[in-house]
Length: 264
Image 1 (cartoon, rainbow, N blue to C red):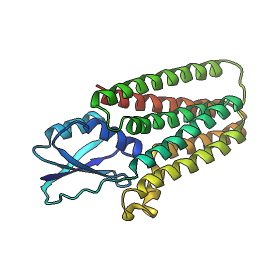
Image 2 (image 1 turned 60 degrees about the horizontal axis):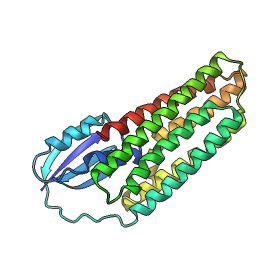
Image 3 (image 1 turned 90 degrees about the vertical axis):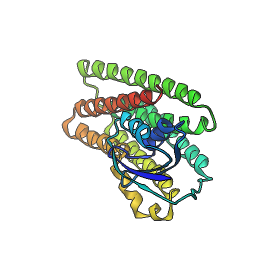
Image 4 (image 1 turned 90 degrees about the horizontal axis):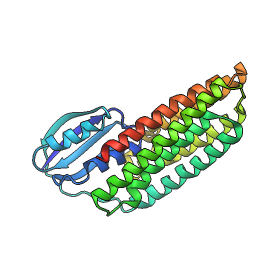
């Protein structure tokens, strides 16, 4: 058996891990996948050639690059018994914050919060696909992924229309205090989710190494909304909120196309 090490530059959180797992699902030569999210590394244990596996990873456009391939005698791969439970917990937290952020975003007139809620929903889609399609066929998983991708794009486009309406309409200031407080809570929630998933990997990754996850896209978005809230208050303008909303909507659409790519 061989093991091949890949560097995945854009593998920032478990969402990308689940996308990679779905993309590689069905390749019979794969024996085991070992993810090191903080260091953005993936080790593939496989038989035969790596060509099909490498091609599939490159098609995801996550900055994947093969580092090395070598022979290995390792045959013992411990399956994580609590993986389904963890996925369910993360899904529940992400979906709960989708509801919280979209509700408070609409009430506070903040497009930043609405956009961030869609990012949470996007993560929920990925975890949901992995959770509810466990044991299902590859075709079933891809159908679910396709529906999730199109739904995500539709929501983001609706968001773009609302941003344009607000930009060219009367300047209604969003409630900056709600933007900041809810985003801080979302930041904490993302930290808990990512830490929990990292903790499940091994004792080596259960402590401070998990803090590297805070460079992930979700955390950057949370910080962006917080900064936008401060600028809204300082400038007495809704423009910072509309700008961060637009950026996040673009981010959400990119994620949707990534999901659609693996559904082909």
